[in-house]
Image 1 (cartoon, rainbow, N blue to C red):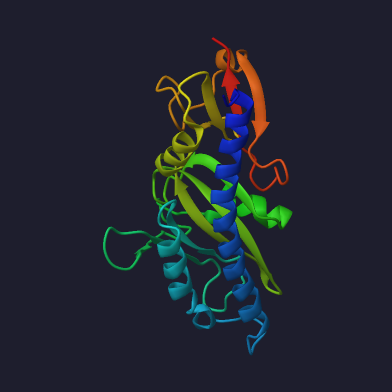
Image 2: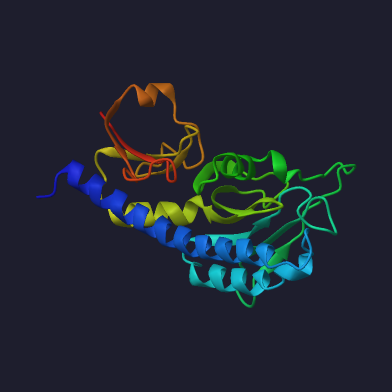
Length: 240
């Protein structure tokens, strides 16, 4: 019979594999962004030199529609000739092509969405490395509890950030199908102390993991022991 540790290892492997394949394809797109910027005729490229991204990201969203709900690019301030700030993001739809998500990028507006202050932009910009950020509620963005996978695309003009959004509902489904345990209580925890998924309705997705629950922690396992900085999630079992 499979032990709890073996079930956790299997679940970690499934989660890590599911996320890694998304990262791999997002990194390929980031590479095309870096190459396009390097090939720009002028020192500061125009938005038109990245028009290919619309189809690239649409294909990416469709390919990974079992786990992601949207994807896009956030440009480093001043890296485009036409605009100081520019953000392009698309969301899945039940039918047809992904839909462009409009963000208010006017600093004088009450609804100004300053993406340059968001963790999903600042963390990979500072580290220069891919990372999973969240769970968090993207207020002013898509306004749901999500995790964003982020990949930096370095250019001479600055570091552009490619990203895609994962809903906790999709991740919870992957987690539960892989785990296949009702007992003990198992939590998939993000680096910010928020619950990504659990096998008990008492510990809801997106909520802060309580200190009283942490005191009952028994086994703790990295989901991606080979690269915990990129995927900083843990599987934790709780004692009764």
